[in-house]
Length: 436
Image 1: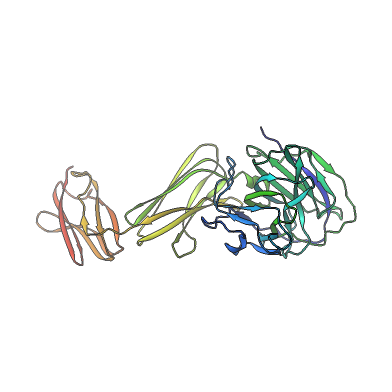
Image 2 (image 1 turned 90 degrees about the horizontal axis):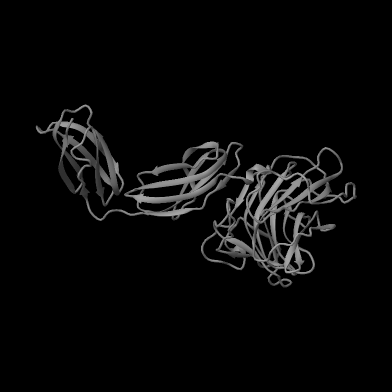
């Protein structure tokens, strides 16, 4: 079953400007929780209160949503004045004003609610002050809760739909600037208990026509997203926030797997998608234990398809150490989302070794493997029975690790050949047989 709530408020606008930047926030800040989200990241800053909301290392789960079960989450609780109350925000725009549709999607779980509506999530101007936009509320309703929406605090528009405590919902908050007239902007709220919305619903379930109510916006922009833990705030969790300027972005590429494995000093990445929509491709990002994520490759996507696709990429000639990889999936319009991160250890061998080529006998190609415990100059050459050099396969500095070299003998005659590995402190020779 899928249900949605749409709460429209018409708001007054003053100002003009540009489209927002995109933001994805999965709260992936480590395996240890903290009573204050600002203590584990510089992305979120405090604009009110002293402590909280709480960073949790566990994530919310919602089938098919890009931010499901990735990273951690943020919990908000009923605070106490000046003790555990706190409001935090994060900029999602590099501009100082915006005049376009803004869609903020997030996962939400409400554990307790009060009889009186109170808000826990909102948007705000680029420079956060005390003027908030699109406040999202919950309040107790029988054995569950209902949601409400306001522009800046009043009026608050309630929806009668009863939602379940302890259940994860997908929420989309839409803010539309009305730049054509001097009348109000529009704020909408959509809530789903299962599935992903195929397109933006048209007819609102609840409306309020307060055009020309005389309430001034006071700001010409929206550029931040905020989470509130106030004195009377209900208990709940927010996760998987994404900011976009179009509804379709909330139907990202459905990534069904992403894995990494080490083979010598190479790392093999594999991933699959169930469906793709407007997928330009995947930017593969890597970071070492002490580094930052950086792009190391770009793999073209399939555009739009309902068929499952598989992708591979091999990151080669890595030094010993631990590496973390993630995928930055980029749409045709430039919007993007990140996959979960995967870790892999690249370990150096403990001894020199020259492996037997495989297959052997072969025609015309075979693979020769070798390993070296330290970096150094390496030569790998093939000789005929008379000692004449038939091929030079490696002649360069190589990092410590296991290596595989392909040898194509299409230009050689059938017969027995020898291949020799030479590096400071080690030399080895083995025989191979070419049969045509």
